[in-house]
Length: 609
Image 1 (cartoon, rainbow, N blue to C red):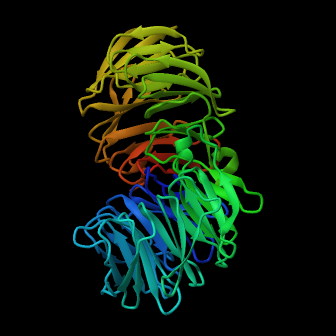
Image 2 (cartoon, helix red, strand yellow; image 1 turned 135 degrees about the vertical axis):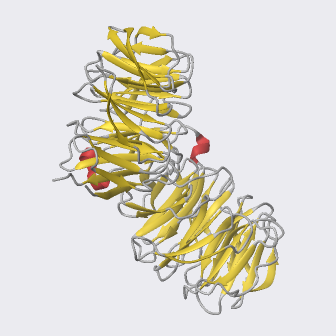
């Protein structure tokens, strides 16, 4: 068997309060990119559902920029490392790597010849460095600042000029090449967050935490004017020029984005963001102007497409920003994902295909990490670290208000195929609920993992050690049938076969055993190729295949009838694969996976002959 990675559904940009988000556009106008975690995500600007990921950094990536040629991308991380890699090959072959400063990279800028790069950020010996992208030799000195540098821009015409801004409330202007300090500009009264040359090189503009906007001559660095009429009432985090250099877009903490006209020095259009219930989430912290597309990023990570003619939001791209920790698939192949920050989203893969986008579950959701999600008969049940289990409808993507307080951390949950019972495993006990979330039973034994036989007659559980308890269910009353001792390691996952009396068991050593439930004997103990804790197991609808995920970043698809036949998907996600599930209605054997990189991936498996 072989596999194909069909889609990557990207997370939103990673945001931090008080920091700007850097977006960069493909010079051809087809894609844009940003960072989240250790990855750089490249998304189609017309159809953002289409995305690819670059995941070769070993630390959190802070910025990535296309070269003007479009053939290379430079990306920097919190450790001061910059990787320069090509965009032509799917493998994104590494061109060179450098550590220009000893701390976080805040921003990068290419010159118009795609030869030179200026990197700025938070260093110990210096706050910036200019170098050749291929030989890495120095092309000047970035001096004049006394605190972390936030942004850099290079004039794209000769004679080259460069400008930087910093937390020391100053803007520094450089002549080049080589780049040399020319003068310091101190017009702002608070942190300066962004500076940007116009595409024609005639101007550059600076914006800061004082809400002020200044326009300068692109060749001399002399101040032309300040934009005051109709200005922002909060910190301005980002600025982007129109392609014709007549207007620019600003995004600010007052939850607005504004288009400014250079000739009249006034606001042309104001966009007000009010979609999120929390006003802080609507702060605008990043933007991009690429062709006819104007994008502004909210502190929640949401990407807003702005219609400059009507002054409205034409569309908003939602999704996860934190690690996805739970996954379930409905009967129509809609994916439901829960994350570290309590968000739950639906992905209509079954009907949308390559246009699949995230839809937020409305209603009273979780306030902390989602630990488990189960779906049966159009009902979604989720458990979270807020010590609650919540119920919702998969059809209208909304929680219905049924909330159960578990009394202790719900570590796992499972439902029967007919949704007659839901069993929740907690650190203190195991709780049984009916279809209306009414508690009908409790077994006072600490449990960490649980699964339910498809007919609801049996419940399988473990306390995280090496014993598995098989319990008979009689309308919520659980009676011990037998105990199976799993001598290989501590049990982390259980998965009951959809038709046969077989139980799949995964442990913290990366081993997967199959047990006969009636006899308690081992059916298969040959699946031992994972090198770390098993995080999820799932049987295909036909019961012929089992898929597993692990903290080793790998996914395996196993053949029950041919135990030595397997598919290995190496490095499926950055750091950890948290969950994996089979889809139901696809012609090919298809699986969905989620992980620490906050991405959702769809894989097609070629069935054996």
